[in-house]
Amino acid sequence: MNGFKTGVMDAALHTRYTPDFMMRTTRQIAAASGADSIWIPDHLNGLFPTSIWKSQYVGASKVAPFANAYYEPWTVLGNIAAHNRFTRLQLGVGVTDAGRRNPAVTAQAAATLHHLSRGRAILGIGPGEREGNEPYGVEWNAPVSRFEEALATIRALWDSGGDPVTRDSPYFPLRNAVFEIPPHRNGRPPMWVAAHGPRMLKLAGKYANAWFPAFAQLPEQYRDKLERIRSAASDFNRDPQSITPAAYFFVLTSRSSNEVDEMVESVGTRSFTLGAPADAWARHGVQHPMGSDFSGAQDLVPHTIDESTALKYSRLVPDGLVRDIYLTGRPSEIIDKMSVWRDHGVRYAVLMNLGGLHPKFRTGFASSLPLMQVLRGLRKL
Image (cartoon, rainbow, N blue to C red; front, side, top):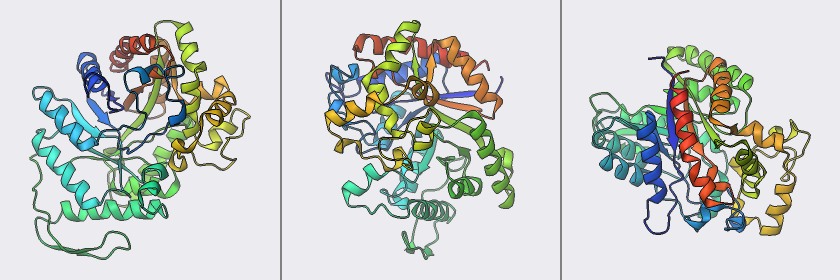
């Protein structure tokens, strides 16, 4: 065993004909490719402009007609666990929203799944995004501070041994709070922290069992941030090597280079790059349409963008930006690119197939097979 692990992220969107059409496909891909885990996002709505989730732009819309019809992740993972009783696929939320969800409920959900899945749960957690909080009456202020308090609350409850917990907090105070679900025999679910900025990296060093960033950064940036996390772990008297270096990658792949180019050039793929921060756009000489200091996915509210604006924005996206923030290419090319990430520290890659953004559904669906080739190849890195 070389130690390099893989996971597969599913969109968990409602689909026509059967409500779990895409999820069944993802489960089959994960099992057939020897992946180590399957992941579900935590969204009430998505990071894609609803106005262009149409068949002329996005092939997946033929099967999943509603861009924001996301299923609740812990429920989905329970269903997956029930359908995969005899596999050892780990089950992760990628990642749950620490602001919108009360941390006591998150602690309960993760502990429950861990027991019922025979110790296979992973609690991926992050500060959330504006689009999943502000429209629903949750204040979008001080997300990192709320996140820090959420992590401390979860740990306090998990470590309480069933004794009442009282804890002051500006966001999640506890008053004689009781948490009696005991640890599974292999302990509590590992906590995977989605961290990018300096404060978040420090929190990853303090709390995380794995570091789980997503979206646009360079391998060199990943290496440098990993060192900062490990330094923070040492400051908190933790073993720096105990933190798994993971990452979440969006993938555009096909056996045909022409089809990969079509995916890169598609309106759907280019529109999804609005979730990349402004500095990623600036690397390619282009200003982000939302401004030169726009943070990206965390502050994007894409369902407020009308069709003409989304199309205008998509025309601003250079090919180089798409190829920079996604893993693009034929399977062998993606494996070669991932070897660079491995050399910069990554040991666990979770992949999400964006082939469905191709305007032809059949082409997008066919990308499942080369994705399996990628997953199998990565296990040999």
